[in-house]
Amino acid sequence: MIRTLVVDDDYRVARIHATHVTRVAGYELIGEAHTAAEARAAVARLKPDLLLLDVYLPDEDGIALLRSLREAGEDVDAIIITAARDVATVRAAMRGGAVYYLVKPFTFDQLTIQLEAYRRWRAETESRHISGQTDVDALFTSRHAPAPKPTARSLPPTMQKVLDAVRAAERPLGAQDVSDLIGISRPTAQRYLSELERKGRLELRLEYGTTGRPVNTYTARAGA
Image 1 (tube, rainbow, N blue to C red):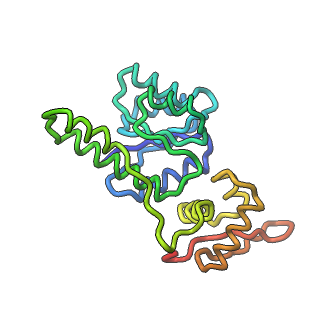
Image 2 (cartoon, rainbow, N blue to C red):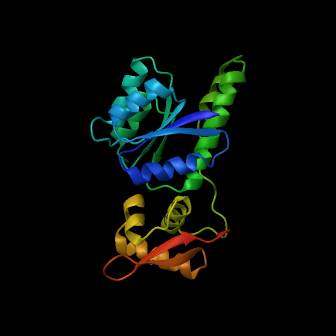
């Protein structure tokens, strides 16, 4: 089992990523951290094999954290999960030793594919005999996998991200929840949620508070 620590300053996003890790074969979720200080303490205490690591942490840059962990002798890998998409940050992540870099928002199919690729890579590094450059090249290539090819039933990319977010959540989600999770506007989130409900992929629920109008929330339909 690959012991995995999720590091993200947003508690809801961290919980969704953590929940998804538990659904991927070969992985064990050992905790969540929301600051660099919490992550450093958790790494020292729990000795994870892998971090799902955000760049934007409140007390330290995530890539700087990874670099300092390596310098301290911690044997831990990291998949960077971040909204940062500038070349400088990507290069810094590569220099810092990240095994892969996923740009938010992404589909949970993409995350699963990369986790499965990392699991295969770890197995190969433990068993493969290096006889020459071909073996070395194969190990470097196997650290990540291409995104899945779209099928005829594929949804538009943003709509798929909305559906994935609702699928992974442990509670019904409203438009504001989806907006916060994947970085789109609330009206856009509501439009996609309504369309997914129309397509039969989501189920609408009304949540009533103590005052005001009910809030539309959504859950995934079985098999959707």
